[in-house]
Amino acid sequence: MKKIITNLLILIAFSASAQINPELATSGINIKMLFPEGKNKALILSYDDGRTEDRQLVQLLNKYHLIGTFHLNSNKLGSKDYLNKEEIKNLFKGHEVSVHSANHPNLPDQSKIDVISEIVEDRKELERLMEYPVRGMAYPFGNTNDAVIEAMDGLGMEYARTVGDTYTFEIPKEFLRWHPTMHQFAKAYWEPNQPEKDAQEMARFYKVIEVFITTKELAVLDIWGHSWEMGSDANKWSETEKFLKLLSDNSAIYYTAQIELVDYIKAFQNLKFSVNKKRVVNLSAIDLFLKKENKTYKIPAGATISID
Ligand SMILES: [Zn+2]
Image 1 (cartoon, rainbow, N blue to C red):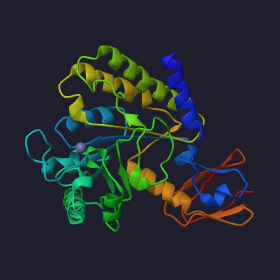
Image 2: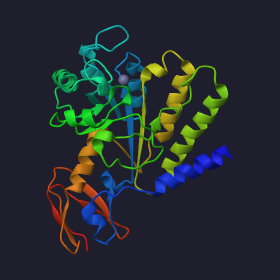
Image 3: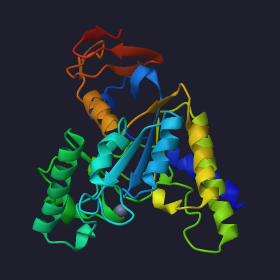
């Protein structure tokens, strides 16, 4: 019974899909965003803290051609159990490095200037190490509030992930309150010696993955966690490999760093349509894809095309 209810909840939550572009929503013409190459699904794998176990995790991601987003605390790098500053550029090649604050405080407890300096200090140091603009973030402990978000105005963070699991595949309406789909393994292993609960949570985790793999709707699966949760536990690592493999090599899935997905969505939201929705111009530097009345169109970067 419990399982049926869980499945039902996933389906109900999933059917209430987000409106991407208000201009399109009111047009009465059925135009929907697709991901690159006309794919309908996107996968984000988001890991926090930059501990040494990230080395093992990156190896697994690379093995299955998956892309990770890694949120790092620059003042912790180089201390015990954390990655070294010197290694991160190479280690995270092909993945995203993003802000997790310089020192990992609970941001809602900080003064405005401390929120600002925690983010800017981390951003500057990660940019020095990675040699690109760092524009994404995950909140330490997943915690944020209105005051934190107000303090972040102008700091260049284009999305910030919480830990408020939704168990849905919706694109968040507010990118600075980016609630993920779910924690890796759902809430299995959150408390010691709860084998029955662990089994239920693992079943829930794989059920959500199964729904994602089978859906034909627009869907973003955003799984978050920490490599240190696997620690030196071989079972948890083989479980990690199992679900990564399950999600790999799927032609319907757009494998992406979180910032790249945000860039794509923002570019899509900036498409300019004629009033009758028969022409569209893509002013961005990204090729965009949409579905109109069940037909897929590619709008190349910079191009104006007919979608009649
Ligand atoms: Zn953290």
